[in-house]
Length: 119
Length: 110
Image (cartoon, rainbow over all chains, first blue to last red; front, side, top):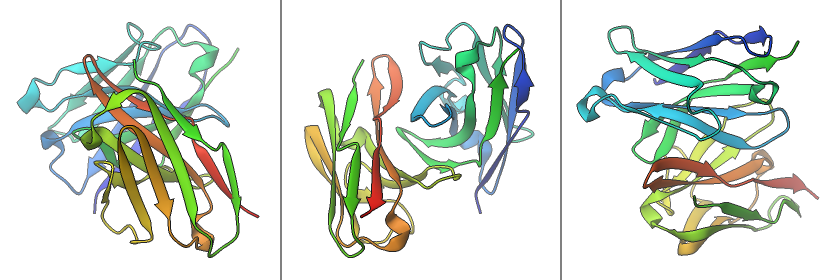
């Protein structure tokens, strides 16, 4: 059974940093791209970014709203994807979902972790 | 950047009725790159349809997707109580690689 479990969310002040983790199980983690998707309270879904599998270079892509501030990385030996969030803004407040990216869509989702950016 | 517009914003229907949800793209989208998700309150989204018309694993056949170009549709043939939720369409753009969602359609009990 595919499982994705996010951790690391919490309350953080504007301008500070936070790192989220996504621990995967039930599939060969290294074979897949992994994405992060967020959802602000009461709002819709917003793609944050993804990291390709090593077979496709392990490179990353980001939404314009987070590019230069957020970094996605992966540790295939541990089956973990990370989202490093720097220079956080109040508008980054959201539930952050880790997803398995099946080429052009998201076939499995974690339960999400809440990040609140507030002073 | 391709923008996805979903309509209506809210659909009020009774169990057993047919639901037709629309997703319109600002530019042509490859059918292979269009997906639909269902989200219930307090839960993560769930993949329903990919490639515009292929049902994901375990999705009942009352859910169907269709469309091409700029107009895509999700149809629920007969609403079950568990189908009342918010539905999102999503597309993949390759140059540069971006994934975008529509604003969602809420299907509520009338």
